[in-house]
Length: 472
Image (cartoon, rainbow, N blue to C red):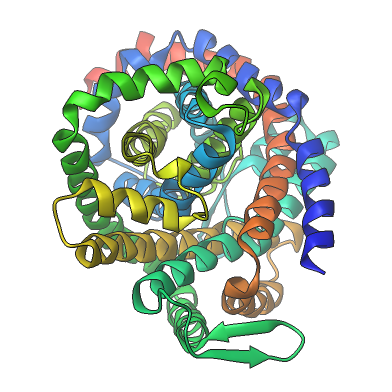
């Protein structure tokens, strides 16, 4: 049964993530980079300064730092650990090259999304700040584009419920827990009509669903508070261990970089034909990069719109740092670890097992300790992603339902159910479904970014020309 499902899903995925969508996203990032004069290079230090420096006289629900942590909670997840491994195994080391290229231009995309989200945000009757692609499509492009805004919101609900938010994150968490506590797959429990699973799998999915339920009921304030604690701590922990692995193999770095670049254009020369063509490396690298940092999807601006700021450019710069931290730093560390240790070439490994193997082989610690650290990072990364995407998808549903609280409450229970069911999906099916939903969500958002690129350029020029960046 699963083989037939996977075949259908792969056909849809290849169609959605074909050359046209990759060109759309990359060309959008390139256009926006030119329009803002490669602001992602010139103003990156200023952007990091504003991450920790609250704006005076701000308007919104949460601080810029909390908004960024909420966005990062949704981006730093299994994509950084499992997604990178999946991309390298499927597309060869060259997938890393295209992942970084997409992230570089994606920083300008993320900047533009957040800028537009703050500029066109709204406040509802309860005083809650609302914003995101559905608002800058409707208010920026005009009412006649409302169907496009609704299309984005619909796909946003799907991505949260079936893609990044639930299945892939939960599957990654439970796989990591199983690999650590039950590596031999003992004591399977048969579930009629579904298959046999370990008690660890069933218990993990149940506990995770309960904990998620306890947090998401608190809404944005509770999610942002949890994210503001977990995301920085776990990011630093993962960074330290990954950097240690790389430093211990520092002499192998030049060869690894050479392999990545060569494989990006001639993957057959590196992988002996296994990795496929250059197009596969591009497809997997760009798709996994977007899955990880979400630049172009239009998700992060939903959180950015709630930031306490009155300057769209300022929040755009703060949000831009998320793509840099997520992909250019964390994903790159994962990818280098996998390439250096040769984990991507080991037969029989997939998903989190690839990164686990890299940490076990590359770090000077007992294998159980390395596996435990990676499991811990993945659990918390994925957990915060689940929380962040619940908020995103709820905002999308609120837009579709004209603010119906009843619809949002019902959606939450379906979301919790999807969290529980995540482990029982196959790894291949999980990532393919996520890819499809991501691609469909990106299309209306990228159309809006192309249409409003002049607004982004004008807001950016006016902000710096007025010297507002010197006022703090």
